[in-house]
Length: 224
Length: 162
Length: 249
Image (cartoon, rainbow over all chains, first blue to last red; front, side):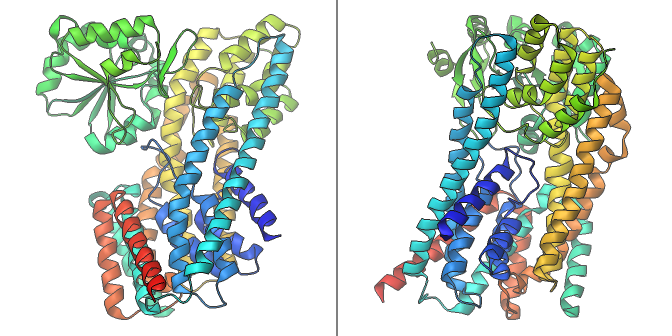
């Protein structure tokens, strides 16, 4: 049952990445939190989403030849995590889920590339009367959107299956200490957040607002 | 400072050039060599829209560009030279003016009569002969859409898609 | 100028949300652009099948744009077609904007508005805000800007035709890029200490860990995107170590 839900939801997230509207439901933060919500565990889902968002911020859809598809991978990993983990944060399972998502997003990205090749063939319209060609264009364009939904659904539900097996088999008992695992996840996520500075222009250009921000963040920490 | 990149790209100024190559080569000026654009202010305006502050764009005809090549090589600014087709680049290189330089093919897209060689390179017979002529003018020609992609040499380009 | 009815204008705008639906390496957004423009072409060339066919063909050619700014190109091209502008001019217009609307949107949205909104939501969540506040806050804030940009771009295109360049260059929206980037850097700074002290894994870590995390953050800031592979490999190493130890025991 949860497989069907994950597939449909993965399809929606996949569409949001490219084919339709781009409301950014597919950002890991959102995809994670909302997937958690789907399973009645929004906070757990959001934790995975937050960690994966740190890895996604540095990636701009420009300047690289291939892109990972973070949204569908986040849904797969988060669903597997919330189905496996207990009520409090399980550092070992969280680490496995995050690493899984970071690998799976490349496979998902490869499926996007494949889809774009299929679209090359789909958008080559047959000869015919003008009105018929226009209708063919509409049919084929919408078929491409539908296929993208199916692609994303399959990629997500497959990832969900693989991740569930992985997490159940190896997640508990997790041999590394919980404090150590939490620490390592935090160091990794903070390193990735820092790495997003060049998105806004880099250290030389943006150090002033960045450092003022760190000051403000530290104040927030004291107030918390 | 030398000319940091000679690039043939049908889309001229776009994300791959400004961000992809821009972040690696840090050009100060993009010079678009194009006989038609040089006479069309409204198009120049549109092409220049996406540029970040600190990156200037100029449009030149082939003859002027040929005269200024030496000056650009010796100037302070880091220059990126763009043309939309291979023919213009070859005209620029004629007479050994670009001997020892490298030309990057970044995007020649699908049009009727062109065959696919790479996902971002489609060539017809004319384009193939322009690559030959560039090579014999002492220019190293290769295709690479982005700095992180694999560089594909002219010989391999000409072998494929035949 | 032929009239473009309300139905055609609304139809194009709705279809523009699907413009990337058949993204492909041959024409990029070409087919999507023609798909979105069809309501206008049908209205303008209702009784001229030959002209309709030629128009359809020219709009199936290579096109690219940032998806949120694509409505500007659609609006402007619909206007040019309605004015009966030369096919060559229409094609030259599309060639000129297909690069710049991409770069402009990349810098304004992908490297500005989007990460700034995400970091704002992350700051709220990590500072102790409710989970739904972060999610709903992001969706509302981000998409208010997103939809406003689409509407503004579409109307500008319809009104200005091929002269959008001039208007765009002087617009405050385009010049907001620098401010957005500074705001993004500020919010990134806000998130860093919150994340580094363990809020990102729902705990309060000892100071040594927090210091280590912050140092890693600064290292990341100096190395940028290259950090990603290193960190992923390191985390994967830890995961494999855990799996190995788990199997061994």
